[in-house]
Amino acid sequence: MSKIISPNSVRQLENLTGTKIPDKNKSGLQRIMKDMPVRLTGQLAGLCRHSPALARQFLPDIGELSGQGIKQTWVGILDTGIPGLERMYLDRCIILPYNQCPAYCRFCFRKFHAHRSRPPLSHEEINRALDYIQKDPRIQSVLVTGGDPLMDLPRLEYVLRGLRKIEHLQDIRIGTRSILYQPEKFNNSLIKLLLRFHHPETDRPLEIATHFNHPDELTPPAKKAILKLNKANIRLYNQTVLLKGINDQAEILQSLFRKLHLLGVENYYLFHCEPVRGIGHLRTTIQKGINIKKTLREKSSGRINPHYMICTRIGKVEIGVDGYIEKKEGRSVWIKTPYNISTFRSVQAGFRLPAGICKTDNRGYISTKYL
Image 1 (cartoon, rainbow, N blue to C red):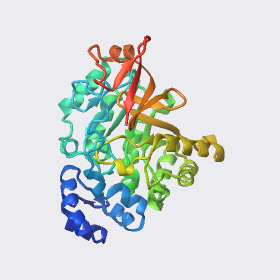
Image 2 (image 1 turned 120 degrees about the vertical axis):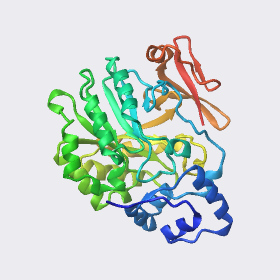
Image 3 (image 1 turned 60 degrees about the vertical axis):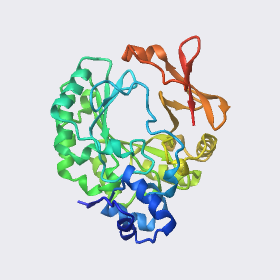
Image 4 (image 1 turned 90 degrees about the horizontal axis):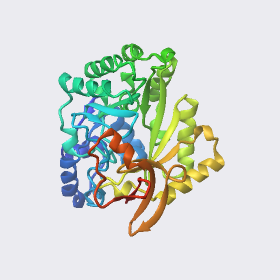
């Protein structure tokens, strides 16, 4: 298994990457690494040495000292009062049994130490989450994510076993980027474990939600892992984040999406990079994302084109489809969403909109301010 490396000093980072960090940046990078940890696998560290697109995703940047953005980008109805159980939508929820990953993306909205240092869920806490899902038959889909749940297979198995006992629950999704980080993890033993909870013949499939941002990430070992899952009839879908200086060119994304399609992976979402504090250097504009999407639609088959999504603080919005930009205000825009406050209150009776950044029209539909 590819070794996990967690450099906690600038010197260790220099040794790991084989690059000399300018003296003027060293103290700043040291502060960044304390609040926003750095973690890589051995394989990924090697890839970062040869691919600027990967290095920019996983190595700290002095730009992270910027105070622009927010630490908690999701508000909505995430807090259910049960540790590790988040819910924003009517028919689905999220369980986070494990909060660490084999490697840490610099643009992750859970990137801060406060999240990474949380202990994994105990069996008692998992049981509380399962009980919540059991009592609400509107929940038909659960995403098991984190962190990366594949880092603790016994805990993941406990979650999956409990979920499969819930009769009204249909699909279970596992969110993981380990196909890039540790592709060797996808061995016969893991495949057998996943197949125990994969029952597409009774409309109760298990799916893998994965994450590739650049063609350089589709290494031979990663492709081998994908094809092994395909052979086992376990479906995969991909979510890509639009990142400045990494993949914010239509040609790069077209190449990535076509390669994924040929491997049998569904291209599901192209996410606009969230306004997380300290990642402004990785965020492009919404208009550029729209322009890229138009180019992809013009020059590529619809079968390889994902939905372009903006993650507002009350949910995802597809600009031009289920939502639109109402007006600009300074460095922000007001986005009309497809969400009605009555739906949120049917999930959580005491739900309140985030103060100062949301408003409703006379029918209860919500607009929200977005950086």
